[in-house]
Image 1 (cartoon, rainbow, N blue to C red):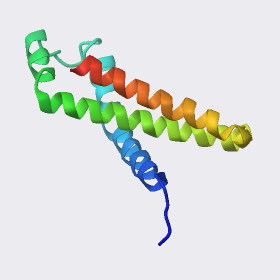
Image 2 (image 1 turned 90 degrees about the horizontal axis):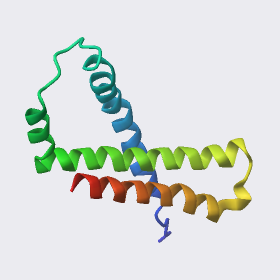
Image 3 (image 1 turned 60 degrees about the vertical axis):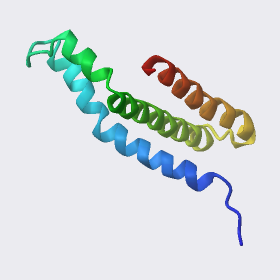
Image 4 (image 1 turned 120 degrees about the vertical axis):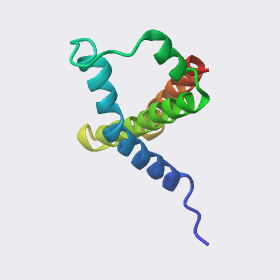
Amino acid sequence: MVRRGGEPILWLMFSAGGVLAALVLPILVLLFGVAFPLQWLAAPDWPHVLGLVRHPLTRAALFVVVALSLVHSAHRFRYTLYDGLQVKHLDELINAFCYGGAVVGSLWAAWVLW
């Protein structure tokens, strides 16, 4: 039996992060970055938003979106460095920088949300 290591898991997380980043983040940016500040839509009142964000399922969903988006961007940045700058000889340093940044960002998101 051939051992593949952790690469299929990374590709799965890359794919899920790309889907979430493409479907969820633009809506959030449009609503909270454009529509509410420009008063195109009535902004929800603060107690309503706070009650929504304090719900455990909302916190878990926000954590999943942030963590998988960070993994997606780390994977994409890693292969951009490999292919664009031709620095594949720095493989271990680039992996530590990219995925370490995603882990640190995910831990920070978990700390902020909980």
